[in-house]
Image (cartoon, rainbow, N blue to C red; front, side, top):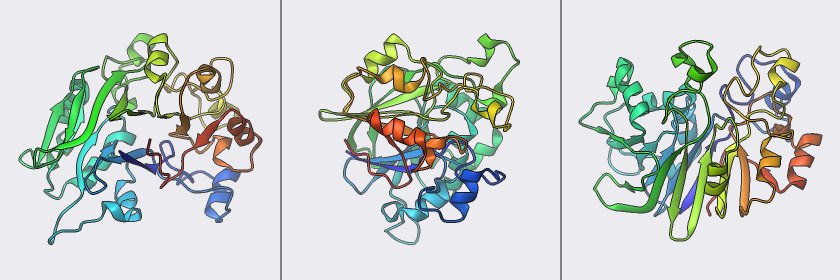
Length: 307
């Protein structure tokens, strides 16, 4: 299995279009220690020729143009993209589907909850049903990523629930139990090929015993790295919400990602979906040094993460 990070940033990318923070200014100025990143998504392939995406970010067209392995190669119109696996219905995960609307055949794999959200929004009708198949996938059931011709890609997948939050535009109110959403609103993806296991969790509100058991023994884990501090957005004057309110656990702190992964047998651990406010985006930040000492990597666009 080959796996490549197409985008590593959280919503808005890095630099974010309306952000004038020092970090974003450094990225715009071409500072080599502040590498720009597009919004989070992953590409995987079993044969190096035909590819499946995990999430379709709003930056998908830019990501395709940046990666020659995703360029058309046959006839006047073609694409090596044969499927998209969705981890939720957030704008950051589904908006890029609209870039794939030019009557190109592929399959969308998602929970029934996410498929229903797509069906309920008429804008996604531009993905003609005779071209784009939508497959509702049960949670915790292995399924095969299949090529358009029906052949097996060699990659088995499984969607599993993680603690999270309903998509912002679907929030019914401020009640915590409502914000948590329904089963299938926030999921992780496990991809398997032979003995290799790659797990992608771009959004997670907290570690649980079940999730810990799931992650143990994985070859590669790409995990939610949205914020360094839970109250980061408030501290910096960028917004009123904590990470928990947004459905993300912080990287630092007693209940953060670094602490949660200590002792977990994971061969390679990588942070992805990183907000422009998070100092780990800067190669020369003290926070990056702390992270690397703990054995973590920070994802970047084009990063090869094959197990």
